[in-house]
Image (tube, rainbow, N blue to C red; front, side, top):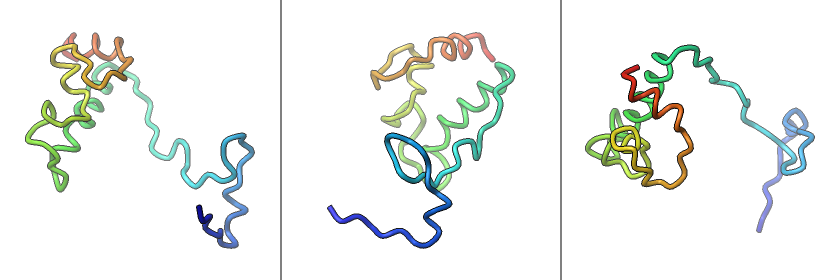
Amino acid sequence: MKVPRLSGDAEKYKVKASNKLHEIWKRDSLAIEIYTREVARQKIDYIHANPVSGIWKLARDDLHYHYSSARFYESGTDDLDSLNIYSLYSMANKGC
């Protein structure tokens, strides 16, 4: 495997971590506080709509997009076998 050479700016991306030498993404660059159930529901709706709207159109709707958790919120079925979001599921079902 060929390892790419880093430019002179690589020093500013060095981190002290056991699993990596450099980090180029800011960890909290887009972090927002989820302070109400309404805001949580808004963010979930956005996440579900994003892959099926705009330029992406990866499926006809959020329920038919394979990697969407929207089916979980509709039916409680975890097709992805990776969801651990009971509190968000119950939040969604309360109409928030």
